[in-house]
Length: 115
Image (cartoon, rainbow, N blue to C red):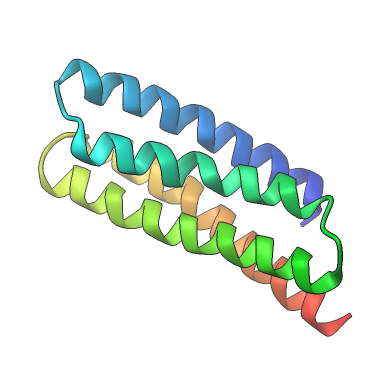
């Protein structure tokens, strides 16, 4: 997968997370919405930062941070689903998008380490 696809998917995912946060705030949920808002949008921010890394090590570090944020976002999605703040359909859609990004990040990190 190209970096461009990773950037596009992470941006699209961030937009979905922002929409989710808006809906959660309308339901007066603020604890998890703040957390998932930070982690879900941080994924793309770190991917974009990696584009201008100072070194290969810096590039890998930024992608690893993005991977950690994606993992954290998955946790918050699990909690939102288990506490009935999101439907199974919403959960499956967001988890699928998050998993896809994680897979691309893992692949990109492995490729960068082997170069």
